[in-house]
Length: 364
Ligand code: HEC
Ligand code: HEC
Ligand code: HEC
Ligand code: HEC
Ligand code: HEC
Image (cartoon, rainbow, N blue to C red):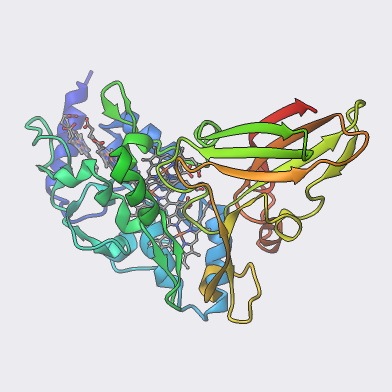
């Protein structure tokens, strides 16, 4: 039997002689097995044209609409090793690895908060928040910023399109939250499991975190016959929804009779067109005022209403049907409006089916 340490020594040897090489996550995973398994389930490992159908669709559309001009822009944050190896071809092995271990752990310093290009990368050393680990078979160095939001913000803070419009604003939203709560991105998105910060980076693509973030209260005013729905973002350190302007959060309200039959509902086909009161999203528009349009075509924000942390929002609906017996209220989430998914030929139910964030009923 050859002892396992022998293989580890061989790997360490290869490492030293391949300092400037691309190291896929699977290579780090030879030794950091659990973190690797967690990262595989995270969106950071699926941020690529190969693995994320919504990104692939929007990327292809962006490239087509702009004669290839946006090719590099989209790849920079979604496949950040592309910039390091100066090759934006989506088929290369380093681009296919997405937001990979080597990129995040090669950050020597941070020069700005506008894109993954603002990370100053040094592939010769493995950087982290850990004190310089003497047992590591690779060079290690400590940087304080690994435990602060500064580390996430170059990719997550904002995204300005080529027309100067900020289409994403997670960074600004979080800054306001931080003033009163002092919680970093890592506090919520990299909770420690067994003393090690989790690399699953849970967000809207994992069930549970979104569902636990919103409180919904129902009240019925008998004098005015009005249903009051109060929603509070009590769990996210930024708006809900945040990030990409594709996301939709919306109320589905049904007034029912004593047999459970629907007498009235706030929308039937499309909440964007039929009920803006119960809609929480950003709608981007072009200069003629048409929307929603894709981020690269947008010159203005036509509509914006989202759930800001700790700021309750009350939406009211008159209930004046004589047979009204009760109400059924759902707050729902979609990754993107159905017409966009259709246009991009996305049929995966993970994307096409609306998800219930919270549901409550009440007898009147
Ligand atoms: C040959 C095995 C091996 C490989 C391959 C390897 N590491 Fe390590 N690494 C270790 C050991 C052993 C330590 C120090 C002990 C420990 O804390 O886990 C360490 C320490 C670290 C640390 C410091 C944190 C700490 O716990 O002290 C980071 C961050 C890290 N490695 C990231 C990586 C990344 C990223 C890759 C791939 C680019 C990688 N490692 C590849 C074995 C390895
Ligand atoms: C999106 C960026 C990102 C990616 C991708 C990433 N990490 Fe990390 N990693 C971090 C941050 C940030 C921390 C420090 C978090 C903290 O302490 O709150 C960290 C911490 C660590 C630590 C130190 C754990 C400890 O005990 O303190 C190790 C080891 C590590 N990562 C290895 C890896 C490996 C292996 C991969 C790929 C399978 C990987 N990381 C992918 C950002 C990343
Ligand atoms: C500054 C870094 C950055 C740039 C540049 C960037 N993105 Fe992103 N993108 C992100 C981040 C961070 C997220 C995750 C935010 C979220 O989940 O809402 C994301 C999420 C997405 C999503 C949602 C994916 C899903 O499965 O839900 C799509 C689609 C997308 N981006 C398309 C694009 C396109 C197309 C371009 C080029 C025009 C682009 N991005 C450029 C950082 C960037
Ligand atoms: C207090 C906890 C908390 C803090 C702090 C926090 N988040 Fe979140 N985050 C959440 C919750 C809860 C969700 C789920 C709600 C949602 O998806 O809109 C979420 C969702 C997300 C999503 C997924 C959005 C989508 O629709 O795809 C991204 C991306 C994200 N957060 C990034 C960040 C970044 C970057 C920071 C730091 C600047 C941060 N978060 C700080 C709790 C937090
Ligand atoms: C190199 C750029 C980059 C860095 C650095 C980065 N991210 Fe991301 N992150 C992305 C991209 C791109 C996506 C979207 C992937 C997709 O949907 O295709 C994403 C997605 C996410 C999501 C959404 C997951 C979900 O289920 O919806 C969360 C949460 C998140 N990142 C948290 C963080 C945190 C916390 C940090 C800092 C410790 C961080 N990210 C650092 C690029 C980055």
